[in-house]
Amino acid sequence: MAEIRLLILSPEETLLDTAVDAVTLPGSLSPFEVLPGHAPIITSLERGAITWRSGTEEGKVEIASGFVEVKDNQVVVAAEK
Image 1 (tube, rainbow, N blue to C red):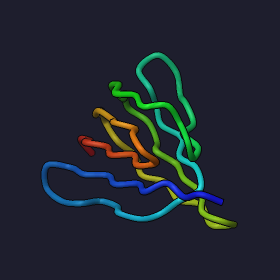
Image 2 (image 1 turned 90 degrees about the vertical axis):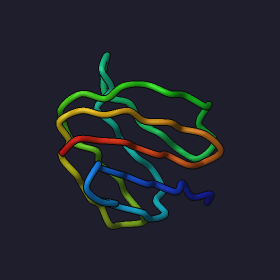
Image 3 (image 1 turned 120 degrees about the vertical axis):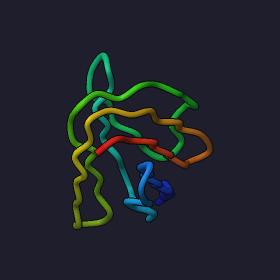
């Protein structure tokens, strides 16, 4: 199965840099999921949780707001915690 590189950055630090199977993001209009092969997109994020899974493991980071770019199986989030 293809993987997605998930990179979550805040102004202070890199919060996460890992390979995952799927990512769910708190989009401004509604939450959405990114799977391998997702179409390119740039959008804003609202307060909520970024969740991901890799195999049987799951993780979560709470954010106040931010932006995300999805392109070429890479998800880059610039977020305020």
